[in-house]
Image (cartoon, rainbow, N blue to C red; front, top):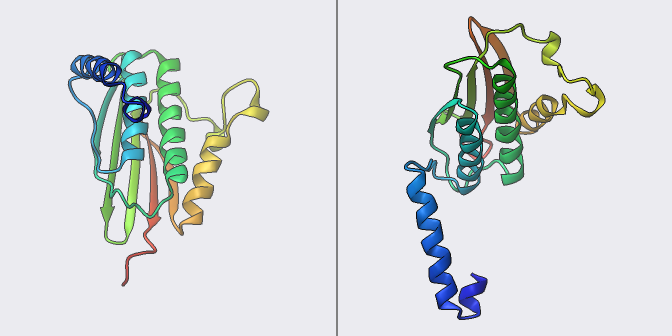
Length: 174
């Protein structure tokens, strides 16, 4: 935008050419309908895939989502960072992360599922050595979900971990 405002059209063309080349390298870009969610998911997908983690998404989110952009970024960022971190630590073939975001009745449901073959830490607390500086992500997610009159759960089933946030849409009339 600045280049256009400054009428530097040659530089704008060069910038766009570079962006198209980058887009060609990545054949598929996630489009959920919400630019904040798109940015978070595409960034985390790139990180995960560069670590050899299969990353799939089934998400539809309104652009005018009632959850603030900051809160949505915090929920998705924390849940995806946790999933990527544990899979990177496990070094297991066929590691995966599945993201599902959908509206159902009066709720927005955000589900992050990942393969996991270890033992879950007690109360899902951090396994990092500097505990005072870690483990805040899940608590942050819980606080945000509670703020929207929702519910959050993490469960360990067989060989995967499933984190689900169900957030009440206060804007929907009964």
